[in-house]
Amino acid sequence: MREVAFIKQNKEKWLEFEQAIFGKAKKNPDEMAGLYIHLINDLSYAQSYYPKSKTVVYLNYLASQIYQKIYKTKRQETNRVVYFFSTEIPLLMYQYRRYVLYAFVLFFLFVGMGVLSAKYDDGLARLIMGDAYVNQTLENIKKGDPVAVYKSGSNWGSFIGITMNNLKVGAFCFLFGIFGGVGTFYILLQNCLMLGSFQYFFYQEGVFWESVQGIWLHGSMEIFAIVIESAAGLLLGASILFPKTYSRFTSFKMGMRNGLKIYLSTIPFTIAAGFIEGFVTRYSLEMPNWLNVFIILFTLSLISFYYLILPFMVAKKLKSQNIIPSLD
View 1 (tube, one colour):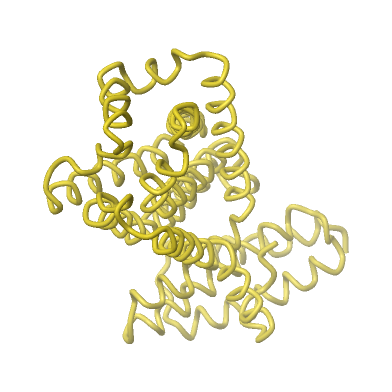
View 2 (view 1 turned 30 degrees about the vertical axis):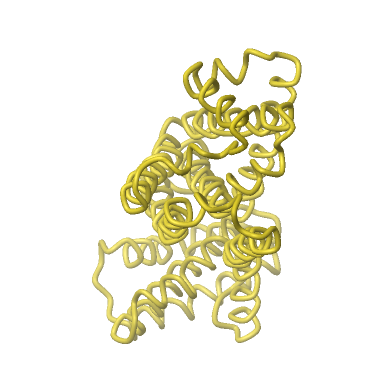
């Protein structure tokens, strides 16, 4: 059967699937399971006869969404939060892993730009961070405490203020993706230039390791979370620019919903980073080096495992059990 005829023959059925997925048609779990079986059959046929077509991409997405809706309904009665973090988010990260790759490529590129710009332009650090901040940091370096800025304010006050600011930055990284991803691009560029130039500034002043202790103790999770939030913003932008087989509005709704879920998943990590910055970072230079290194590597490993490794483990497990189709 030609692909056009295949689409024409099943179009109405697939539209019914879409309505069930997006809540326009009420279906109980058994009916959803029946739809899922029919859809898997169509997907298998399409993968056999039209392996590189957009039809396979479209059916893959529908199948994954129906799966999530079925299993979400079944598990809501047990523990919705556990399911969200242990299955739903890893599957989303696997499905949209290319946006994570794009976000990390941009992150390293922009940080590198910040380092090189600071190397060849001594005034960049002052331009980005302001004269008052740079002068204060230089004064702290002379006093032998390069990261004394993290000791200002109370523990709880710093924790709350820093966490709220980081949540706001993360929200901007995601929500500004609504401008076709350009807003996310700009927010990430701004923060990465700041990070790169600031790290080079410390290197230039001969206190690079001290800055690593002060910045990356909490920054490993904080900055990683910003990259993931930027990936959610790029996903949102792509859903508007490249709707594929969906209407632009339907694609936007899917991008907004899935991107929001990814952003929400970063909140615990952002709060944890804020706690470390408020209560631990101020003692970074007084702590033994091994403890600093342990905290940095442990927090970086934890968030890296969750967003970069666990998604592949969950997807592999569910695919091996024939619970979900390929999400490639």
